[in-house]
Image (cartoon, rainbow, N blue to C red):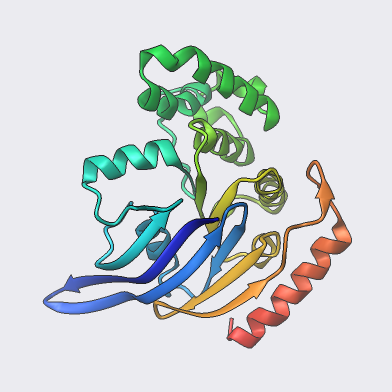
Length: 259
């Protein structure tokens, strides 16, 4: 079953009375359980695509269906509620609230979605997620008191707190060093192996190589697609030879695309 169906998606801005077409009749499908990367040159429309298919930015035309539900004609309130309950988000700039602890940042969207009656279950889930991400010890810390890698793992916990149908990630490793980037992508690949559907925008070839498929966008159009399949491995212990082989394949393909 398709988790995300996008058909003839267009996004147009008007700047100084001039029409600028950012996305031009973009169509693609992401199946349940896929992890799909979107790559392309700066200014090609990658982030606009992610924001448009997630309802964070209103599409000018076209259709976006999430698990069979058309979202482009929803009101702002309907879209906000739908995002909160059905989608998870991970960003390069982690958007944590500075006046809250790491733990409180994680549970906040859960409390917003479930109200007072669901808080006990949200607390339990937050603790489970933090244990899974190996950050249980930093729950009481301010967000300025932890490393970038720990903070991004906390963001992943926050994105999962409402058991979303799909995760959207915009440059999730862009602000991290190499070792933290590797760790975050291994976590996302492990989540994908457990069945989570993920769409991510990235400039990083190594991150894209851990995805099951890559879409290459240029000037608002998808110009190419590379299928890799899921990473082989058990419980997040992925084969290094598989990873290196995928990276070589992606590097060669990106050259052909004009990367």
